[in-house]
Image 1 (tube, rainbow, N blue to C red):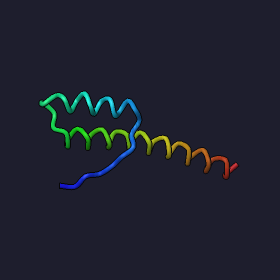
Image 2 (tube, rainbow, N blue to C red):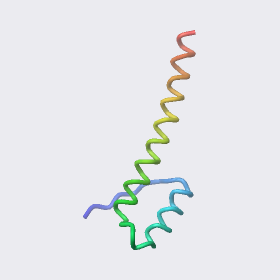
Image 3 (cartoon, one colour):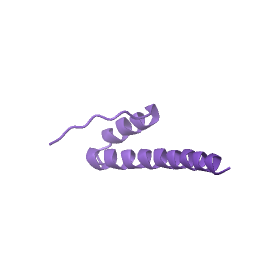
Length: 59
């Protein structure tokens, strides 16, 4: 078994704690889902910022 450390916003941490207390959801599946959602949101923000930079350079 491998352990990883990640830094997540407080709201994600809260979701993890509540959901892990619910035995209907496995921890590993939940962690993977929340991390994927967080990274997707981060990527969208990064892509948006990158596009703004490209647009400024093309002006």
